[in-house]
Image 1 (cartoon, rainbow, N blue to C red):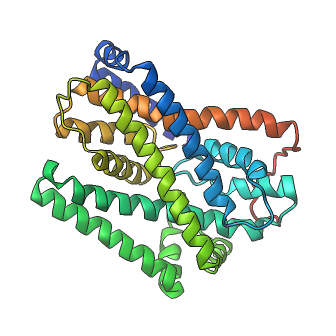
Image 2: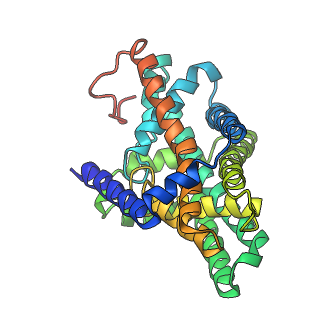
Length: 321
């Protein structure tokens, strides 16, 4: 019931945003995108997809990119349909079905991969804000950097001090959305911190590159639509705007951040001078090229895997080893 409610909220937010931007004006702006930009965007989206599979692969042992690519794509699609992307661990279940690897052995890598995603997004937010300070008021600059720095500090403390982390997890477990934070999760969470540092560094670099690819997608779309250069476009600003929007939308627990990410990123682009319809076109096309494209690939991966794996009704049970 909650999943349906959140999907409904996301749908309503998207509809309201389209009405606010103007459907006709939005479509006219989208039509400005040229064929070369479309090819560049498709190329970057594919590179991003491969990097996202590689960043998980380097954390694992005895698996090939070919084996985990469809699993990664399907799990991303499933996760994007759940509040706060909490279904990410499904990839451990799928890998067990394909390779027979115990869930307890791969789940820590899934948790670490998610931590690295958030860590890199926060770093991109801070870097983007500092580099794009010309667009921002000093008050917003100070508050933003201080907030993200504080979040980073909490993450480091959470990872390095188990006693602190346990208290935080037990507190969050009182809320329905965090009911999965049981002792088994906590043990897997801190098992993730024991993964070799070399693997963590490699995965971090690949995670960084994957998000850079996504930022470049929005940047090239903006260049194509904004040919008249009515607004000065800063590459790092797009990295920051995307990162901030995704982090904020995760807190809304909307599936895939859909609705929240689009609304916030559109607002950010409008705030630096883009027209409503132009900002909306950049965001909607960019999100389709990133989130939408991954959902399509996820569906194709489901068809591929369903012919090779016997998907059972209890596949979501993470307590099975």
